[in-house]
Figure 1: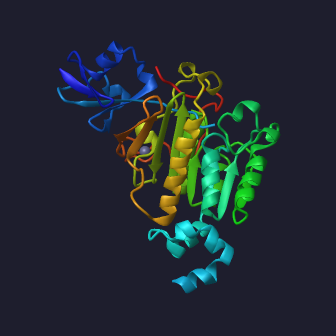
Figure 2: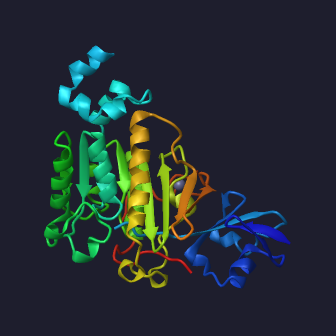
Figure 3: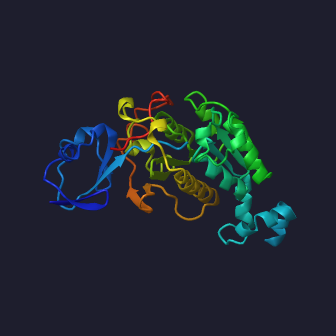
Amino acid sequence: MQVKINGKPEEIQSGTVLDLLNAKKIEPQMVAVEVNDKVLERDDLATTHLHEGDQVEFLFYMGGGR
Amino acid sequence: MELLIKMEFTEEQINRYSRHILLPEVGGKGQKKIAKSRILLVGAGGLGSPAALYLAAAGVGTIGLIDSDVVDLTNLQRQILHHTPDVGRPKVQSGKEKIQALNPDVSVSMYEERLTAGNALKIFGDYDVVIDGVDNFPAKFLINDACFFAEKPLIHGGILRFDGRVTTIIPKKSACYRCVFKAPPPPGLVASCQEAGVIGVLAGIIGTIQATEALKLILGVGRPLTDRLLDFDARKTQFREIKVRRNPNCALCGEHPTITELFDDGDPYAGCAVRP
Ligand SMILES: [Zn+2]
């Protein structure tokens, strides 16, 4: 199925947000995940199923400033 | 109107700020607001430098600078508030001189100290807007929390490698930093700023947007960058806007907050940023 990840359309296996993080080798603690403009609680990553057309944002921490 | 301007500004000031005063959105009234405003820069480094210079040029009444560091040679690649002869000098001192050389109308308050849960609220209380120009997550969370408790608008910024991010937070009205990022990342997972690197001009791009946001808030002009993260990718020269919302589960500004007072959320030396 197709979803948008950080604005880009991508073909992914159906599954949960955690499955997608694992497939992309992203450590869940390193990212805030938004699905359709709503930030997910970390505990909900494994139970939130993705659907066709969902907009997923992986928001990485961005420090720096000096 | 013209008479009013002449009563409140000197001839020289009317000339200095003429390109502002000409703008219908600013005018003499708006310039007066800028002249009365007090803006706090937490960090007189990469983001703080361009913000300080443009805010000084704009005629902001008081600029506060918090920084406990001295200027290091490695800073000069991006921290344009500091010049080569300043290496080894306190950043607040060096910053104050540049600001006042650019515009003697501006008064500068120096805080040569580290921001902590102990001093943040007292300092923030004296300002209208706070600009985040710090380089570590514990400090970014502390600034977010302190702005919430002091009810001060915050212009958040971050830069790393070729990426930058900026957003405006109006406490209790728009999404806060903790609404999206609950807590600092675990220290083991983050690279330190020294090892990460950043393209120097990025500080200018993001810091200047922060200054723009601060001036807009002071003037009450336009639409603030609230409930939106503006991410910039210098490799592609591309901006992307990510919508965010207030999170009812936010530990700070949510419906059942668990953070009820200011605290230092981790070791400020722990880390800089993460990106896979
Ligand atoms: Zn919040």
